Amino acid sequence: MREVSTHATFLLPGGYRSLDGALHREVELAPLSGHEEELLADRESAASATFLTGLLTRCVRRIGTISPISSDIIRSLLIADCQYLVLKLREATVGDRVPATVQCPWDDCRNKVDIDFFLHDIPVRESEEKGPLYTRELSPEAAFGNEHGELYREVVFRLPNREDQEAISRMVEADEAEALALLMERCIRRLGPLHDPGPEVIHRLPPLARVEIERHMEEAAPQVDLILTAHCPECNHEFTVPFDLQGFFLAECQTSREFLYREVHHLAYHYHWSEHEILALSREKRRKYIALLADELRRVSHAT
Image (cartoon, rainbow, N blue to C red; front, side, top):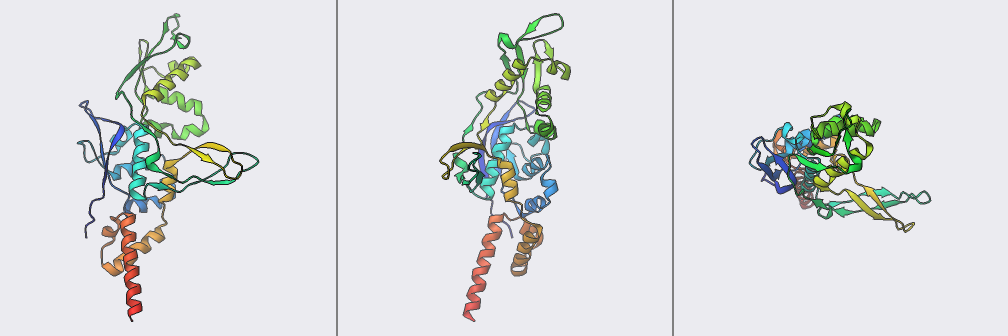
Protein backbone atom coordinates (compact mmCIF):
# COMPACT_ATOMS: atom_id res chain seq x y z
CA MET A 1 0.00 0.00 0.00
CA ARG A 2 1.49 3.33 -1.07
CA GLU A 3 -0.03 6.75 -0.51
CA VAL A 4 -0.26 9.12 -3.45
CA SER A 5 1.94 12.16 -2.88
CA THR A 6 0.10 15.15 -1.39
CA HIS A 7 3.18 17.32 -0.99
CA ALA A 8 2.73 21.10 -1.10
CA THR A 9 5.11 23.30 -3.09
CA PHE A 10 5.64 27.02 -2.40
CA LEU A 11 8.28 29.76 -2.07
CA LEU A 12 9.86 30.84 1.21
CA PRO A 13 9.59 34.59 1.93
CA GLY A 14 13.35 34.64 2.64
CA GLY A 15 15.20 31.59 1.45
CA TYR A 16 18.12 29.31 2.22
CA ARG A 17 21.54 30.32 0.96
CA SER A 18 23.82 27.32 0.42
CA LEU A 19 27.60 27.29 0.87
CA ASP A 20 28.12 28.03 -2.84
CA GLY A 21 26.15 31.29 -2.44
CA ALA A 22 23.05 30.11 -4.31
CA LEU A 23 19.66 31.16 -2.92
CA HIS A 24 17.03 28.38 -2.64
CA ARG A 25 13.40 29.34 -2.04
CA GLU A 26 11.12 26.64 -3.48
CA VAL A 27 10.03 24.15 -0.82
CA GLU A 28 8.39 20.75 -1.11
CA LEU A 29 6.58 19.89 2.11
CA ALA A 30 4.76 16.75 3.24
CA PRO A 31 1.92 16.84 5.80
CA LEU A 32 2.36 15.20 9.19
CA SER A 33 2.05 11.43 9.07
CA GLY A 34 1.20 9.06 11.89
CA HIS A 35 4.92 8.74 12.61
CA GLU A 36 5.15 12.46 13.49
CA GLU A 37 1.90 12.29 15.46
CA GLU A 38 3.40 9.44 17.48
CA LEU A 39 6.33 11.71 18.34
CA LEU A 40 3.93 14.53 19.23
CA ALA A 41 2.18 12.27 21.71
CA ASP A 42 5.25 12.63 23.93
CA ARG A 43 4.24 16.00 25.37
CA GLU A 44 7.51 16.59 27.21
CA SER A 45 9.59 16.12 24.05
CA ALA A 46 7.15 18.18 21.98
CA ALA A 47 7.59 21.11 24.38
CA SER A 48 11.37 21.23 23.90
CA ALA A 49 12.99 24.03 21.90
CA THR A 50 14.49 21.59 19.41
CA PHE A 51 11.32 19.62 18.69
CA LEU A 52 10.08 21.89 15.91
CA THR A 53 13.46 21.67 14.18
CA GLY A 54 13.19 17.88 14.15
CA LEU A 55 9.59 18.00 12.94
CA LEU A 56 10.42 20.31 10.02
CA THR A 57 13.46 18.18 9.16
CA ARG A 58 11.15 15.17 8.76
CA CYS A 59 8.46 16.99 6.75
CA VAL A 60 10.47 19.24 4.42
CA ARG A 61 11.35 17.08 1.43
CA ARG A 62 13.26 19.65 -0.61
CA ILE A 63 14.48 23.26 -0.55
CA GLY A 64 15.39 24.36 -4.06
CA THR A 65 17.62 21.61 -5.44
CA ILE A 66 18.71 20.43 -1.98
CA SER A 67 17.41 17.06 -0.77
CA PRO A 68 17.36 15.41 1.69
CA ILE A 69 17.12 18.17 4.31
CA SER A 70 19.24 18.01 7.45
CA SER A 71 18.49 19.57 10.83
CA ASP A 72 21.47 21.91 10.25
CA ILE A 73 19.72 23.32 7.16
CA ILE A 74 16.50 23.87 9.12
CA ARG A 75 18.47 25.59 11.90
CA SER A 76 20.03 27.97 9.35
CA LEU A 77 16.62 29.10 8.03
CA LEU A 78 15.40 32.58 8.98
CA ILE A 79 12.83 32.74 11.77
CA ALA A 80 10.09 33.98 9.42
CA ASP A 81 10.84 31.15 6.98
CA CYS A 82 10.35 28.62 9.78
CA GLN A 83 7.11 30.34 10.81
CA TYR A 84 5.95 30.14 7.21
CA LEU A 85 6.85 26.43 7.08
CA VAL A 86 4.73 25.83 10.21
CA LEU A 87 1.87 27.77 8.60
CA LYS A 88 2.07 25.66 5.42
CA LEU A 89 2.52 22.44 7.42
CA ARG A 90 -0.62 23.20 9.38
CA GLU A 91 -2.48 23.93 6.13
CA ALA A 92 -1.27 20.66 4.56
CA THR A 93 -2.09 18.58 7.66
CA VAL A 94 -5.32 20.06 9.02
CA GLY A 95 -6.53 22.62 6.48
CA ASP A 96 -6.61 26.36 5.82
CA ARG A 97 -9.34 27.36 8.29
CA VAL A 98 -8.32 27.97 11.91
CA PRO A 99 -11.05 27.93 14.59
CA ALA A 100 -9.55 29.76 17.57
CA THR A 101 -10.87 31.34 20.76
CA VAL A 102 -9.26 34.17 22.75
CA GLN A 103 -10.23 36.11 25.85
CA CYS A 104 -11.24 39.75 25.67
CA PRO A 105 -8.48 41.70 27.48
CA TRP A 106 -10.79 44.33 29.00
CA ASP A 107 -11.02 43.85 32.80
CA ASP A 108 -14.75 44.46 32.95
CA CYS A 109 -15.46 41.90 30.21
CA ARG A 110 -13.09 38.89 29.85
CA ASN A 111 -15.54 37.29 27.44
CA LYS A 112 -14.47 34.40 25.21
CA VAL A 113 -14.23 35.57 21.60
CA ASP A 114 -14.16 33.34 18.51
CA ILE A 115 -11.60 34.48 15.93
CA ASP A 116 -11.96 31.94 13.14
CA PHE A 117 -9.70 32.87 10.22
CA PHE A 118 -7.97 31.42 7.17
CA LEU A 119 -4.23 30.91 6.95
CA HIS A 120 -4.11 32.38 3.45
CA ASP A 121 -5.28 35.69 4.94
CA ILE A 122 -2.20 36.01 7.19
CA PRO A 123 0.03 38.76 5.72
CA VAL A 124 3.45 37.49 4.62
CA ARG A 125 6.14 39.97 3.59
CA GLU A 126 9.01 38.80 1.44
CA SER A 127 12.44 40.26 2.20
CA GLU A 128 13.70 42.60 -0.52
CA GLU A 129 17.39 42.05 0.20
CA LYS A 130 18.50 38.44 0.47
CA GLY A 131 21.69 38.94 2.46
CA PRO A 132 23.42 37.01 3.82
CA LEU A 133 24.92 40.18 5.40
CA TYR A 134 23.35 43.63 5.77
CA THR A 135 25.15 46.94 6.25
CA ARG A 136 23.35 49.81 7.93
CA GLU A 137 24.33 53.19 9.40
CA LEU A 138 23.09 54.27 12.79
CA SER A 139 21.94 57.78 13.55
CA PRO A 140 24.53 60.24 15.02
CA GLU A 141 22.71 60.03 18.34
CA ALA A 142 23.14 56.22 18.41
CA ALA A 143 26.86 56.25 17.55
CA PHE A 144 29.04 54.08 19.77
CA GLY A 145 32.70 54.60 20.62
CA ASN A 146 35.86 53.00 21.88
CA GLU A 147 38.00 53.84 24.89
CA HIS A 148 39.78 56.57 22.87
CA GLY A 149 36.55 58.45 22.22
CA GLU A 150 36.30 57.49 18.52
CA LEU A 151 32.66 57.20 17.41
CA TYR A 152 31.37 54.58 14.94
CA ARG A 153 28.02 54.30 13.22
CA GLU A 154 28.31 51.46 10.70
CA VAL A 155 26.96 48.04 11.65
CA VAL A 156 27.05 44.78 9.64
CA PHE A 157 24.74 41.94 10.68
CA ARG A 158 23.05 38.75 9.55
CA LEU A 159 19.40 37.98 10.32
CA PRO A 160 18.37 35.71 13.22
CA ASN A 161 17.68 32.10 12.31
CA ARG A 162 16.16 29.00 13.89
CA GLU A 163 19.45 28.10 15.61
CA ASP A 164 19.51 31.51 17.32
CA GLN A 165 15.93 30.98 18.41
CA GLU A 166 16.85 27.66 20.02
CA ALA A 167 19.89 29.23 21.73
CA ILE A 168 17.91 32.00 23.45
CA SER A 169 14.64 30.11 24.04
CA ARG A 170 15.29 29.30 27.70
CA MET A 171 16.59 32.80 28.41
CA VAL A 172 13.69 34.81 26.95
CA GLU A 173 11.22 34.28 29.79
CA ALA A 174 13.84 34.70 32.54
CA ASP A 175 15.65 37.76 31.17
CA GLU A 176 14.45 39.23 27.88
CA ALA A 177 17.19 41.92 27.85
CA GLU A 178 19.95 39.29 28.20
CA ALA A 179 18.31 37.18 25.49
CA LEU A 180 18.34 40.16 23.11
CA ALA A 181 21.99 40.88 23.97
CA LEU A 182 22.91 37.27 23.18
CA LEU A 183 20.98 37.45 19.92
CA MET A 184 22.87 40.59 18.88
CA GLU A 185 26.17 39.00 19.89
CA ARG A 186 25.40 36.06 17.60
CA CYS A 187 24.14 38.14 14.65
CA ILE A 188 26.35 41.24 14.55
CA ARG A 189 29.38 40.71 12.35
CA ARG A 190 30.97 44.14 12.60
CA LEU A 191 30.59 47.33 14.63
CA GLY A 192 32.62 50.08 12.99
CA PRO A 193 36.11 48.52 12.64
CA LEU A 194 35.42 45.79 15.23
CA HIS A 195 34.86 42.41 13.58
CA ASP A 196 32.80 39.82 15.48
CA PRO A 197 32.49 41.95 18.63
CA GLY A 198 32.15 39.95 21.82
CA PRO A 199 29.66 40.26 24.69
CA GLU A 200 31.63 43.06 26.38
CA VAL A 201 31.27 45.31 23.32
CA ILE A 202 27.59 44.42 22.89
CA HIS A 203 26.85 45.28 26.53
CA ARG A 204 28.57 48.67 26.12
CA LEU A 205 26.32 49.65 23.21
CA PRO A 206 24.13 52.68 23.98
CA PRO A 207 20.43 51.77 24.42
CA LEU A 208 19.54 53.81 21.32
CA ALA A 209 22.08 51.86 19.25
CA ARG A 210 20.50 48.58 20.33
CA VAL A 211 17.04 49.87 19.46
CA GLU A 212 18.15 51.01 16.01
CA ILE A 213 20.02 47.76 15.26
CA GLU A 214 16.96 45.76 16.29
CA ARG A 215 14.77 47.93 14.04
CA HIS A 216 17.15 47.50 11.09
CA MET A 217 17.02 43.72 11.56
CA GLU A 218 13.23 43.72 11.64
CA GLU A 219 13.02 45.88 8.50
CA ALA A 220 15.46 43.68 6.59
CA ALA A 221 13.86 40.38 7.59
CA PRO A 222 10.86 38.73 5.93
CA GLN A 223 7.76 38.83 8.12
CA VAL A 224 4.83 36.54 8.90
CA ASP A 225 2.31 38.80 10.65
CA LEU A 226 0.75 36.72 13.45
CA ILE A 227 -0.98 39.66 15.16
CA LEU A 228 -4.73 39.14 14.81
CA THR A 229 -7.53 41.66 15.21
CA ALA A 230 -10.63 40.58 17.14
CA HIS A 231 -13.95 42.19 17.99
CA CYS A 232 -15.72 41.36 21.25
CA PRO A 233 -19.51 41.19 20.69
CA GLU A 234 -20.10 41.44 24.44
CA CYS A 235 -18.38 44.79 25.18
CA ASN A 236 -18.03 45.94 21.54
CA HIS A 237 -14.29 46.59 21.93
CA GLU A 238 -11.78 45.79 19.20
CA PHE A 239 -8.36 44.46 20.22
CA THR A 240 -5.28 42.76 18.83
CA VAL A 241 -3.82 39.50 20.02
CA PRO A 242 -0.61 37.63 19.10
CA PHE A 243 -1.32 34.19 17.65
CA ASP A 244 1.07 31.42 18.73
CA LEU A 245 0.78 29.40 15.51
CA GLN A 246 3.48 26.91 16.52
CA GLY A 247 1.96 26.21 19.95
CA PHE A 248 -1.57 26.06 18.55
CA PHE A 249 -0.62 23.68 15.73
CA LEU A 250 1.40 21.30 17.90
CA ALA A 251 -1.37 21.16 20.52
CA GLU A 252 -3.94 20.65 17.76
CA CYS A 253 -2.04 17.62 16.40
CA GLN A 254 -1.22 16.04 19.75
CA THR A 255 -3.37 12.95 19.42
CA SER A 256 -3.03 10.59 22.38
CA ARG A 257 -1.05 7.44 21.67
CA GLU A 258 -4.06 5.34 22.66
CA PHE A 259 -6.30 7.07 20.10
CA LEU A 260 -3.63 6.83 17.36
CA TYR A 261 -3.03 3.15 18.06
CA ARG A 262 -6.76 2.47 17.96
CA GLU A 263 -6.81 3.96 14.46
CA VAL A 264 -3.85 1.77 13.49
CA HIS A 265 -5.53 -1.32 14.96
CA HIS A 266 -8.81 -0.59 13.16
CA LEU A 267 -7.15 -0.20 9.75
CA ALA A 268 -4.77 -3.12 10.27
CA TYR A 269 -7.63 -5.40 11.35
CA HIS A 270 -9.74 -4.67 8.26
CA TYR A 271 -7.14 -3.92 5.56
CA HIS A 272 -4.28 -6.11 6.86
CA TRP A 273 -1.78 -3.29 6.38
CA SER A 274 1.34 -3.14 8.55
CA GLU A 275 1.74 -0.65 11.37
CA HIS A 276 4.52 1.11 9.44
CA GLU A 277 2.32 1.49 6.35
CA ILE A 278 -0.58 2.91 8.35
CA LEU A 279 1.58 5.35 10.32
CA ALA A 280 3.03 6.58 6.99
CA LEU A 281 -0.44 7.88 6.08
CA SER A 282 -1.49 11.43 6.81
CA ARG A 283 -4.22 12.00 9.39
CA GLU A 284 -6.65 13.01 6.65
CA LYS A 285 -6.02 9.82 4.66
CA ARG A 286 -6.31 7.55 7.73
CA ARG A 287 -9.62 9.06 8.72
CA LYS A 288 -10.99 8.86 5.20
CA TYR A 289 -10.36 5.11 5.24
CA ILE A 290 -11.90 4.81 8.72
CA ALA A 291 -15.00 6.70 7.51
CA LEU A 292 -15.25 4.40 4.47
CA LEU A 293 -14.98 1.37 6.73
CA ALA A 294 -17.70 2.73 9.01
CA ASP A 295 -20.03 3.25 6.02
CA GLU A 296 -19.28 -0.26 4.74
CA LEU A 297 -19.86 -1.88 8.11
CA ARG A 298 -23.17 -0.03 8.50
CA ARG A 299 -24.23 -1.13 5.02
CA VAL A 300 -23.40 -4.77 5.76
CA SER A 301 -25.15 -4.57 9.13
CA HIS A 302 -28.33 -3.17 7.56
CA ALA A 303 -28.22 -5.78 4.80
CA THR A 304 -28.26 -8.60 7.31
